[in-house]
Every structure is written in structure tokens, then in C-alpha cells.
Length: 112
View 1 (cartoon, rainbow, N blue to C red):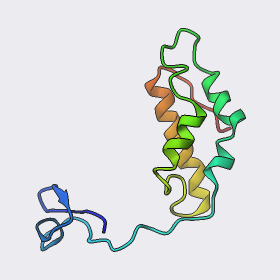
View 2: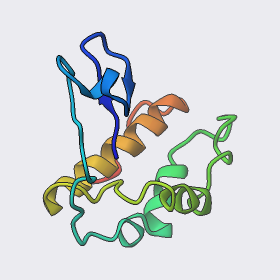
View 3: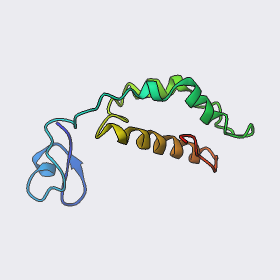
């Protein structure tokens, strides 16, 4: 069961959170996923293209690898796979734009 959020913004799964006045839920099942393969989108060429945009002086340049991304993806099976298939690329782009921004790259136009 997914969490609900109380009228005060605290989240959990009991009646205190899912009862009267709750903001969300309760949810019995996660949203359906589409058939998009994130692995097929985030290819080595794609990932390395982003990585190669970072300056050599960027401390975090070699901190994150495609392998680490794919390992994390295994824990978040809905990433890039909920909603319509055409929503997948913008979601992946937003994720990598955020990661790139946080590591110091100013121009993140890697999905053009």
C-alpha cells in the first residue's frame, strides 16, 4: 500500500494519514508502467556524452557512472516508465539536467 498524507502534511499508511481530511490516497497499487526501456535510452554514448560536457576540473566528473545509474534504476522500476511513452524522454532529460546542474555544468542540452 502506498502512503497517504494527512491534512497537516505528514505521511504514512495508517488511518491517521489516510482517513478523513487526508490530502492523498489511499492507494492500493502503483501507477501502471509503459513499455519504454530506460536502459535503451541511456546508452553508453548518451551517458558519456553528458559526462564529457563536464570540465576536467569538476570534482564530481567521475563520481557517477552509467553502471551506478543502472544499479539505482533497478531500485526505481517506475523511473521514466509511468504515464504516456512520450513523457519518458522529458522525465529522463529533467533528471540528467538536474544532476548536471548540481555538478556545475551550466548548459545541459544533451537531448537535442
